[in-house]
Image (cartoon, rainbow, N blue to C red; front, side, top):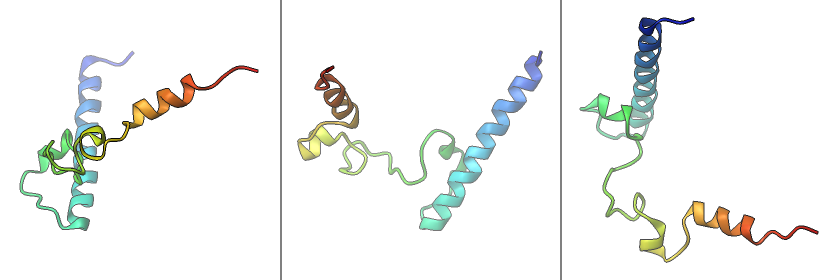
Length: 81
């Protein structure tokens, strides 16, 4: 069995790996990287503003269903033969 230290080390390593990957993406696209640990929870290509039409809810900006609603509608319309 893995000890608590090993589990914590794996979590820290996974977080650091995610930050490194998101930093590479941000640098490739020319986004600011002044706070790198922000990328532990947020994607590098997301501005983080819910009022932004790219980051916000599609129902609000484009009057269309969300991905989850589209998936539900596809499965609920399916009829067994």
